Length: 348
Ligand code: NAI
Ligand code: MG
Image (cartoon, rainbow, N blue to C red; front, side, top):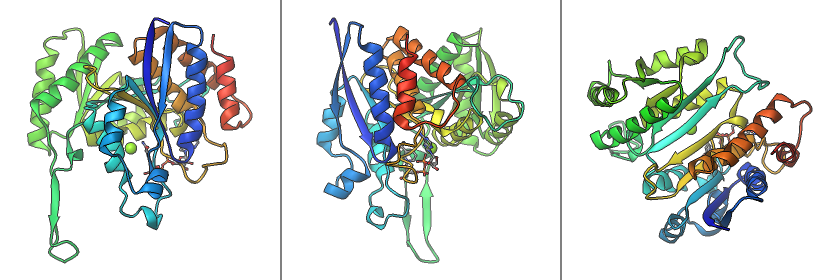
């Protein structure tokens, strides 16, 4: 073994555990004969952990996770409305905390309509684009507060934070990605209304564009982008956008490409200072948890993103091809582990 990758595995809650189990099997299978060893550490985090201990993400958890090379996450979250989780805020206390503390400034969500995947669009054409969502700024930083809470005079503010530094680094990443793909980049914002943050995003995109003359740059307001994602998704190659718009657009992107069971994502720290984290876009799905009904494909495609990020391009491509072949050939409903078996059987 010439290389050891320290992998932090956070199965999480509900179907997170079920899909991560299959994703790990695929990872093990595709790396079995190679010269890279994955040394895994399992972290128990999420709603289950909170209910047991009252912790979401402690400083010790964070320090331990930081010492790894990459993270594979299932999903966290209990049953919506569970009164015991009323004050837990796992989303902010764990997921967003990891993204911010590990400086995951690129939230990468590839959206591809695979042959044979059941999409909701009647004539979708070819869909193959990537959303590069800014991950550490925007309205999600917790820059706000409220006063006179619960009274008719309550005031609540949530201020979007946009820095030249933060925008430039994610925009550069998006241009480089477009350069490796089909040379098209679309900035999505709402510059007509959000004039201050819109102006800085637009200016920086124009500046970086001058260094990438091969990349064709396009701009859409976020509301128009939702129309084109449905009526003409083929027009997109790389979309770069802020944290909030990216959150919303990627759910829509997942929907037009065959649903939540197929959508993978990476929370990436491109400079490699901290481990990047790969996860299916979906949540813990309490409605089907424990029934082996979850589709593990999104988690398995997240393993492909993880392998690619680690420079294991060949292994990443093998996982991707196995998934595509599996999707093209699905027929009867399968359990979560049967789906894992089928994909493993197609790894070449
Ligand atoms: P969800 O994604 O868990 O489920 C939405 C719907 O999609 C459900 O009907 C579910 O059964 C279905 N679904 C999701 N993944 C599937 C899969 N792999 N195969 C087949 N069907 C699948 O979103 P929901 O219900 O809004 O949230 C449930 C919990 O998950 C909440 O506690 C929420 O906070 C958490 N959550 C966590 C995320 C994360 O860890 N990154 C992301 C989204 C939600
Ligand atoms: Mg979301």
